[in-house]
Length: 134
Image (cartoon, rainbow, N blue to C red; front, side):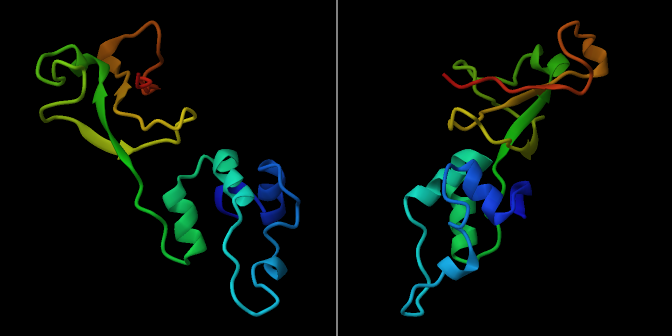
């Protein structure tokens, strides 16, 4: 039950027939394993999984390595040396954290986190902001 779905629940969430991922349908009449159909790729949208994660399951490999993004506290972000001229992360002092799934399918570039010393009125302590790439 990866991502909290049963095989039939995953199929329904992806808009497919509930039996799409049944074990009986994974092997063809000739005994060979079936490749996922293009329709079954719809599970990527239902789960937020990457194509790498999906293919690692299909190919019986271990899970794909998690993508990471740089994390920096709001208080540090205001100091110099953490961003290059184009606004991308630069320099040292960044922590690497797992990247959440991105609903726009564009990878996240950085994550800013509110810290106690920040005293933000917009964000609670330890909450994060994930700027959307342009």
